[in-house]
Length: 513
Image (tube, rainbow, N blue to C red; front, top):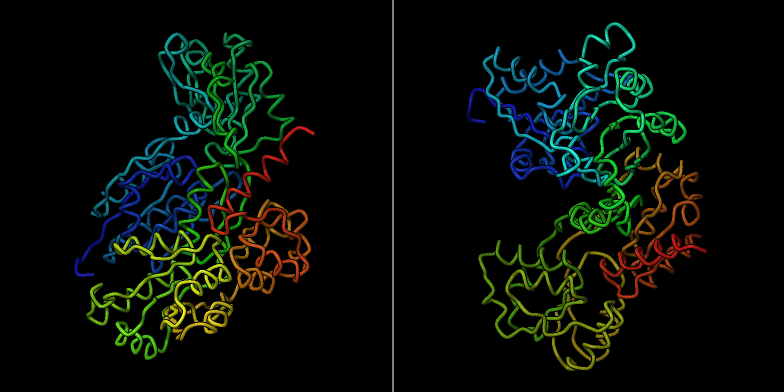
């Protein structure tokens, strides 16, 4: 970097749902060279940082501390003093029970520039996802955010807050970190005069697919929360507004709420594919089994590009093929005029949409989005033509084999499919313990690679406790050949079709017997 000193961005990551990160926060994170994050910041947000950025876990939770606060302060300052752009990614809002002010004061004392980027605090975000309005006309005109970190029945805990005043407070009480000392907090509020019949709720993992809400009264909430085995991070909400939850609860009713889904597509595709799943309430875990890489030998592709006007048809079988083809076309100093009168075929709507982003319309999209259907459609319109098939360096050859019967077909690799060396350890552990619900398979190659990467204890879970969703009959057969049973198969052989199959199957499983 050219500057002598860097800057630290203190960014609120929101209560859990990665979609609650602010636009400004995402912009600053995309520039980061160093990211210091805590355990309340959603791991998916780390994908917004550049791949080359240094990632430092500074998580602190009950009974565990990776870096203490002094070490965190020094880490932020030292990297900034080395001229780096540093992001301190904190759950919720950095200035609401987040110790962001302490970090900012330390940075100021060292002469380090900083910027504070607010986030959605849990007291607003988690309660909204639970269907609890913290203020409501006729129900509450005030809200108090307080910390439940200390036990109010001990000397140190009593000194933190004015509990008699909180018991008299006429609005909504939102107690952060309120589960560890939940019983003591409820007893103290009642002892200081709060009506034990006041509606109350606990919200665990608010805004995440694992969110759980227990509603009761102030007098009974601790017993019910204990029976439900709620654990941090969780909020306690006390006030009449809790009674509105039955009318306003929305998150738990989403079609994939609570479903834990592994996406095995290449990382760029997987990140884009996750949006629809998360919008339906699912927890998404990215576990790419293959990587998309540039081809090493561009000679054959360059030769085809130099002769592009000689072809009658240019055929694409994937979004990656479209992107890679045109990236190389432009690198060679050419533009769309080079295609001239070449007609375009796409295997499905996603590939056609990729062409559309280059302002090109596919002349042919088969009714069924697989190689067999594309081969049949081409055979009907392109007999005797010269066809260039732009595709990955490996995969099924049926398209070339079938179309070559009626036309002259040249196949050229425009990108490389490379197997990843391993899956994330945390993901494998979750499969072994059965704490994921679904794994998506979007190709037979991905199914085979997933099988190769998983240890035997994890493989035994697949198709049983951990269900599979397949994009096509061919992928389903590949899974079956590996000894796995598929629970949901897409009718339309696209990613959207796979999601639709997932939603149908989950709805069927949830339906009353």
